[in-house]
Length: 93
Image (cartoon, rainbow, N blue to C red):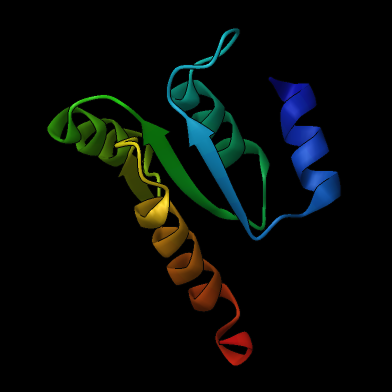
């Protein structure tokens, strides 16, 4: 997990979409590590096919910036990504 935070620090993204259910580490764990180890935090969006209420609770618990339910349509994900990128870089809208 520390290797992931080092790679993210080196890449310096404006936004990261984190799936809640990943093979070796959960999305919640990754977000907690990123919150502890990165000075300039990118926007963090949790993405999952969990029930919306459950995903919202996880997002609140780990202080994710947002969450998106996997519902077969990527429009909501793209919309949230654009929203957060515009918050980070309003002059590029």
